[in-house]
Image (cartoon, rainbow, N blue to C red; front, side, top):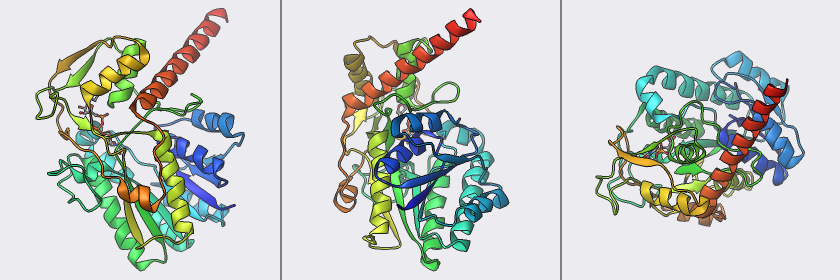
Length: 350
Ligand code: WQD
């Protein structure tokens, strides 16, 4: 049973990927410093799979602590690297925080890959590497425009580092460029846990619907799109997770064409902000309290994926449509509210 080291295993996409790896007969260990996550995800993974995975609470910026994990686990067959900060807006305000965390962490990890001869490496990249594309849908060969944020720049630099590293080390890598991951595991045991006010669209919708936020704002409806709001390619987090399992298997089976193959992970369908909101209203049966606000700096007008390469080469099949994405996101928000109410009532009783 191959063993995979998942960095950022307590995070949103990391935890869903660990569930999928376990369900596909992989052993998993996690490294997560819990700076932007908690071990709640480890509990959720155990409820879903029956397995309690070990998380090393280690900051990848600390090389010695990171190296110690590899010394203790000599049988790692592959790494899936999620651990990074990913809030576009925050990265604009705090660029050094993003360059230090995302780049130093990756460099320390690659040093361990080299020292311990780890053969396979999967990198969590993003459609943000395309910037504002001239033509859509984007393919893996579409040009990388200037990154719209320091976050996007860390993904562009990360890809380049891994490409160059893979050329001179005996390692096969793949770069997975996610579009917009949304939704939650159907069990509602794991899901997205935004810290503070949500920046991303779907948690903003569900937190408005549940009453945590009074009104949400559509960031602009005067763009050159079919209804004036921005277009994105929303993809269910479980479909993203399974693509990682398929990616690791692709490398283990030595089906890779180069030592650093690239794949777009999107549905291939563009959806506007207003269409997402109206679909949520249909799925939930609720009227969402939203207003049209000003444009958001750094927003790409429209992007969605050509996903044919991932479908053909990874044998990837997308299981969740937009209704299911929003339904699982809403079910997760309802579960969080139920748990918060239970905790509140218990506090009142004590
Ligand atoms: C989507 C659309 C907003 C909130 C994200 C991640 C990034 C990367 C790509 C993985 C935009 C609009 C949002 C709100 C709104 N993912 N919106 N009101 O910016 O595409 O980037 O996906 O690497 O890490 O940040 O996603 O969900 O923030 O925005 O109108 O309250 O929804 O303006 O048009 P984005 P998002």
